[in-house]
Image 1 (cartoon, rainbow, N blue to C red):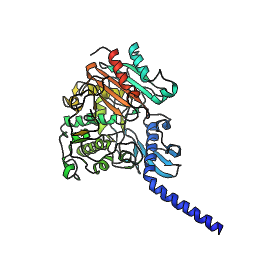
Image 2: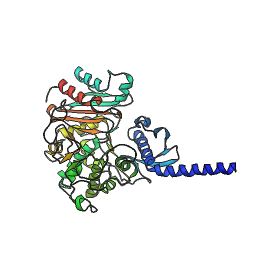
Image 3: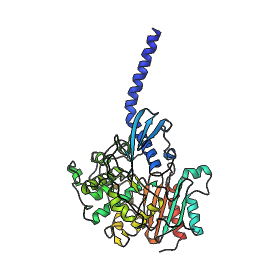
Image 4: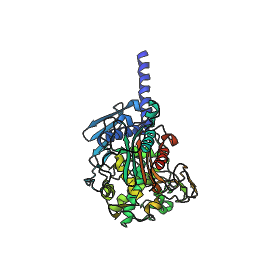
Length: 444
C-alpha cells in the first residue's frame, strides 16, 4: 500500500509538472528564443565569444542552455525543454526558425563610399575627451561604471571623426546591435523607395486582409506609430513584442493580424510591430527579401559591417535587428544630417529628414516628440522636450541604451552604444554628452 501510494504521488507530480510546462511553454520559448538568437549573433555577427554578457537579468537565465552545431544554434531550458533553433547566414546574420532559411545571396558591400572607413583614430581636444570620459563613467566606482555599460562613443563634427573610444573587448571593428535604432534606419530605407517611386507614404489599403478601419492605415501612420493597432511594447515574457520577436516566423503578419483599437491617425502608441509591418509591405512591393537593405542602403553608403537580420519569412526585422560598427552607425547619422546627399547623389527625397523628424498632431500620444522613426526634441505643438539639447536636435534610440544623435545646428553626430539594461533617462549620460560636445566644438 505504501509503495502504491508513493507511486500514485509521483504520477501526480509528473502529470502536474507536465501540465505546468505546457501552460508556461509560450513564456519559456520567449526566453530560449532570446538566448539562442543572442548566442548566435554575438558570436557570428559581432565576432565575440561572450554572449552571456548580453543577457538581461531574468529568473530564467540560470536554466538557459545553448549549443552550436555549424550554422545552427539551439537554446533550451536545461538542454531539454522549450528548444528553439537559430540559423546563421553569411551577410544576413541569425534567424529564428525551425528550418534553415533560404535567403539568397547577399549583395557585396564595399567601403569606398564611406568617409569614416579606415580613417585613423583621432586625438581629441581635451574638452571632447573629457565629455567622452564622463559618458564612460570614468568618475564612477567600478560597479556603477559597469552598470552604465558604455561600450562605444563616436563623435563626428563637420563630417570628420573628432572623438572615439571603446570599452575593453570592443574596437572600431566590432558590430553592435542597435535594437530600435533600426526603426530610424527603416525610415531611410523607406525614403530610398519613395525617391524611386516604388511606394508613397500616403499609400493605404496596404494588405489584402485589411478591411474596415485597417484598410485606412497608411505607411506614414505605421511609421509614426499612429496605426491604431493593438500593441504592448513591454519587454517581458509573453507580451506581443516578445512573442513577435521570439515565437513568430512572420513578424509583420503577426502584428498586422492584431485588432484595431483606435481610429488610424488619432492615437500614438510606440509599436515595434508597426515597423515590421512596414518592412513586410516593402518586401511585397519590391519582391526583394532579406537583401533589400543591402541593395538600397548599405551598398550606397558603404556600410560594410551592417547586417540586418531577417525573420523566417525572409523579411528584415526592421524594428530591432540591425547590427553595425559604431563608425557605420555614425555614417547613418551623417547621411541623415546631409538630408540624404551622399557621394554627390541625392538618395532621399529633398526635405525627407525635415519631414521625418517633425512630430505631427494627434488626439492623444504616449510618446511626445516621436516622428517618423526618429525622436524629435520638439513636440507637435513646438515645445522643446529636453532643455539640454537644441530644439532642432533629433535622435535614434534603442533598447539597453543605444543612441544616435544628430544636431544640424552644430554639424554634429554622436553615437553611444552599450549594454545598460538598468540605466535610464539622464543617468545614461547621453544628453549630457551631446550638450557638452556642443559646448566643446565650434558651431558649423
